[in-house]
Image (tube, rainbow, N blue to C red):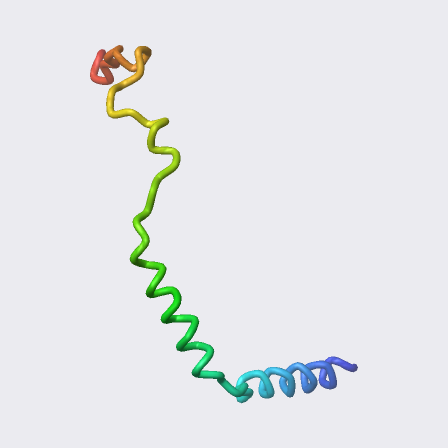
Length: 69
């Protein structure tokens, strides 16, 4: 007993959330999206790129033979 009342409350809340549509401020949305589009023109600089060289480290020179029997 009591489960029906709780289920009815949950159903009511779910229905309110499903059909709720808040007012949308399209001018603020447009301003935010246009600002992000302007920021996309900034060149990306990887501040950690100098840590990763193309040359292998001294201990990476060894060859591991995985097909060895």
